[in-house]
Image 1 (cartoon, rainbow, N blue to C red):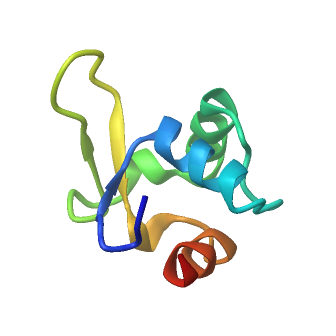
Image 2: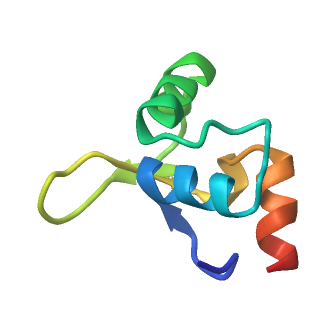
Length: 77
């Protein structure tokens, strides 16, 4: 996974957090979804979040929404 992508699903965020050992971000899909609810990511403008296309649906979040520690880890990757 690279920082060049803009849309990240909760599963992809969790995998990136685990891969880069980012402690501020949950390493499970469920934990990321809970973080998104707590921080109101689903209420952000459409430029920062969107319904995920394809099987299963769900949400995708823009790179700018992710916690700074994960953004930095992805930028180094």
